[in-house]
Image (cartoon, rainbow over all chains, first blue to last red; front, side, top):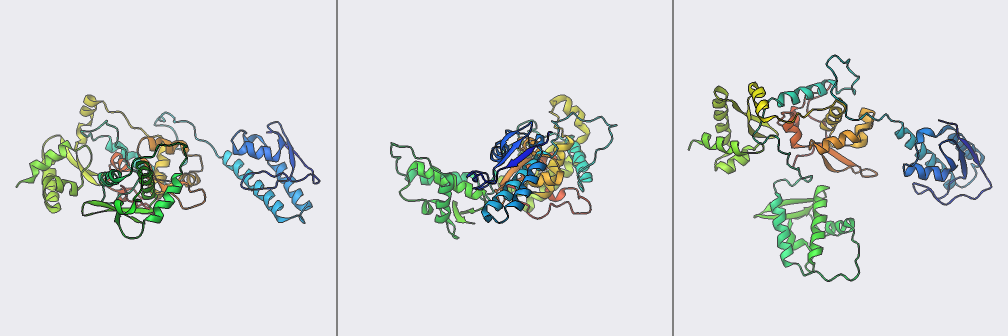
Length: 250
Length: 177
C-alpha cells in the first residue's frame, strides 16, 4: 500500500457534493498508486465499491483533515461537521474492508487437524450441534430427500394462508374493473402501506370493511400486498373470527 | 374406538411432524386421547419393528430406528448434509441470538458472514424475520422449523447451553410460523 499525498487549497471554494448528505467538502487532492483525484471522488469510488480502500493509506488523509480543522476552526460549523462526517465514513468503510473474509466452503478437515480457536462462548454448543446433526442423520423419514417446504416469513398465529386467500378473493369479487392505462404511473408499495395502516384500527375487521369500496382489481392487489408486508413487519395482525379472516393494526 | 391404528396410519402418510392438535383434528379425538394413543403406539413400536415415533420441530413423526441407519442408507442413498465449521458458527449465533442482524453476527464472529447466512437461507435453516427498528432497518434472521427438524430438536429450548447459560435463546425469540 503506497503512501498518499494529500494537499488542500484553503482558498478554493467548497465542493457541493458528498455522501451522507454532506453538502460542502474541503478540497483535498489525493495522490497515491491506487487513487489520484479529489476526496469527493475517492468517497464516491468507496461508496460504489470501485476501489479497494486497503490499498489507500488513510493516515495522511486524516492528518490533512486535522490540519484543516486546526487551520479553519473559525469557519462555519457545517463545513467542519461535514469534514468530520466524511472522515468517519472513510475510516468506517476501510475498517469493514479490513475484516477478514472467510474462505469459500472448505472440505471437511481430517480428524487429526488441530482445533481452531472458536468464537467465545459458543465452542461447546457448536460441537453439540454437530453431534445433534450426526444423531439426526441416523433417522430416516418417509419424505426424506424432498425439498424442505418453504416457510412463510410471516406470522399468522391461528390464521392460515387459505383464510387470507379467501379474504382476498371476497374483495376481488366486488372490485371494479381496471381502467385502461393511458399513462403508466409507478406505484410505491411503501406509500400503499401507509394508506393501509391508516385504514386499519385496533378492532379486528374483515377485509370487506377495510379495503376501499371503489377499489379496482389492481388496487386490491396492491392493497393486499401492502397488508401482507405489514403483517410480516408485525405492524398488522390477522385473526379468524366466525370463519373469516379479520385484520387490525398491531 | 382404538385410536392407535388410525394414528399409525395418519403418521405414516404425514410428510412433516404433526402437532397433537393436528392429529386430534384428523382423528376426531381430543388432545388428551391423542397423547395417550401416541404413548401406546410409541411403546409398541419400541418393542418391535424398525420404526419409531420421534418428537421434533413441535410435532410427532414416524422415523426409522438409528440401528438400521446403514441399511436404510444403502437403500435410499440420502444426500449427506454436511456443515463446515464456519457455517455452523453462523447457525449457532442465529440460533442463540435470534432475531439477529448480519452486522450483529459479524460482530460476534469477527469475520464477514454474509456467505454463511446465504448458505443457511438456501438450505432453509434460517429465514428472514422482519427488520430491526434501527437506522438502516437491517434485516433480521431467525431459525426455521427445518432447523429444528435437522438437529432433532423439539423446540429452541432444547438447544445445548452455552457457557453456563440456559439453552433457551435470549430475549427476542420469534414464534415460528
